[in-house]
Amino acid sequence: MPGTSNDKLAVAFALAAVCLWSTVATAFKISLKHLDVPQLLLVATLSATACLFAVLASRGMAAAPWRQPRSIWLHALGLGLLNPLAYYLILFQAYALLPAQVAQALNYTWAIALMLLSVPLLGHKLRAGDLAAAGICYAGAVVICLGGSSVSGNLSPLGVALALGSTLIWASYWIAKTRDTGDPVLSLFLSFLCSCPFVALAWWGLSGVTVFRWPGLAGGLYVGLFEMGITYVLWLQALRSASSPARVSTLIYVSPFLSLWLIHFALGEAIAKTTLMGLILIVSGLVLQQWLRAAPERGAS
Image (cartoon, rainbow, N blue to C red; front, side, top):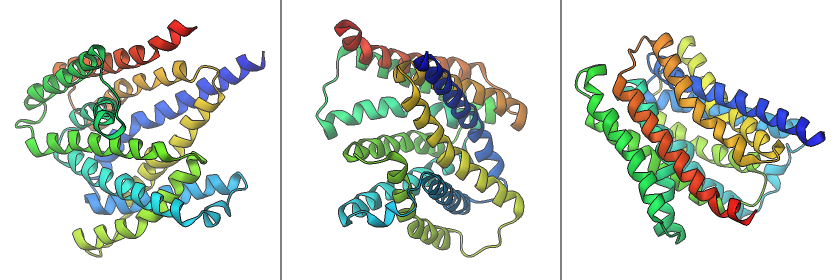
């Protein structure tokens, strides 16, 4: 019975995370109406850093960051330059140039980028099924891009390149994190804290010192809390609580479809049939990839 109770708790945490992540594409577009990209990155990064420290403090770990050795801080600095600095600078710019439905759908190909980058960076080998999953995902991306003109006229090639490029940075970040052996929230806090001076420099250099209006501050705060901060804590808690983390993780595939619904009703974007078709292809490829990855475990059991 305790396992059943823990699984119910895991599903609750996972659904909370999925629902929050489903809102962020809409939040990006609304925030970018009031802030430019470096401004949004600054507000979101600062709020996420404060949020993560509050989580650590609530666990009695407020002093833990300052006890870490130099090697951990240097690793955190490298991670912070990837995420949030490089990743969100590029992703936010992609959202500034593309319809939200296109940017968020393309962003979901990051897991395939992770699989492909793990070959040269981690020495993994690709099987025929892996290549099939990648082909399905990127076919979905092509369908979305070909139909993108029906959403916003001429689709920005730069925006598409940035959206797909951001997936490479995100995948590189997770590959770099394979060296982490400590608390994941502590690691995330350290990388965000180390990134703050560089994010501030990017803001100062690209935007200049400007006055932030309250709608922009509210949007940046929301993005920091519910894209970068507390939602990761909820997701980690879901995986920790579940007797089968792989099953709980499948709930993430609900997120892009919920996001499309919000994009339509909150932003007024007419969802193109090609966007839906392309997203179904992308998610199908991701599901195939996960199923193939779990096949050896099923055979062993």
